[in-house]
Image (tube, rainbow, N blue to C red; front, side, top):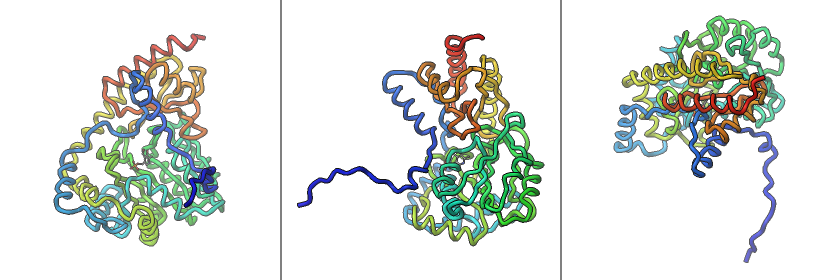
Length: 399
Ligand SMILES: Cc1ncc(COP(=O)(O)O)c(C=O)c1O
């Protein structure tokens, strides 16, 4: 009979390069504090605080009763792929066909699969910094070289296109863009997109354009590089249902890309998830084709909160925040407090009862900032502002 054997776990070497998303860790710490009886205002989470619109929930329930409970095609059901192709063709003003669409469980797997499918060890990937931490994590995981393009506060958290052009080289395999942007709320203008396209020219480089916040815009219009002449076949457009339709837990998103790459991403789906949940996909069809007024209502509410939180933050000593133009985050500069981002975020959680994220968890150029999510009620946002202000006046010296 075999004996129980104790031994040290020896992970594959690549696991040491895998990063994380701090939001989930901070949420856990905040919940632990709540279990100890502390009252915490949650500004760390990046998900709408609204319920999924009822027409979408009803469609999912009907789909469950109708038997959409089995495996489906790895790339997604034709009904949904067609609905997505139509929606992207309309919104981005570019002709997209359903064989260029892959449905996956959330927006995140498009990042995971694109990098896994395209980036060899030593290949360079340019990505926004501060930015969604999964980009850097995945580039490192596959042994690629992560090349940050710095987002600049003085440019409303856009990057300098000349600086960007200087980073493109022979080893550049992939460029990641994200607009509207997490964590800064910055947005690329039409002119930025044109200049980025000019800087890339006719090089054989692919772009991963993360547009998951494309329906959450407060000022200006959404522009996608997929619509630039010559860029349709070089762009992987990432979008999904999580943020626009408050469907984070349904796990459904998609990528739009040239059909030969779509076939390869589908192979990765076959090897990992098999397919995206069938009833979630039917709910996705309803989300795209049904009543859209709930999207606009949520957008307006986020804008109302942004308009309240930014002036409130700017009244706090040591904090200064720009108006985000999209998404649902405020990214104040906190260098005036004299504390680094992590220390300030930790102390606000433990001493003021406000959970938010250190800017440094979005990359090296996020140091000196905090990310506050406005995906919480106005009452809770008011409470958070009061608590931060009170804590700063008590704990940070005046000089
Ligand atoms: C920029 C960005 N891309 C992708 C995602 C992933 O979205 P999903 O929950 O649909 O996987 C997020 C979620 O926070 C995000 O902020």
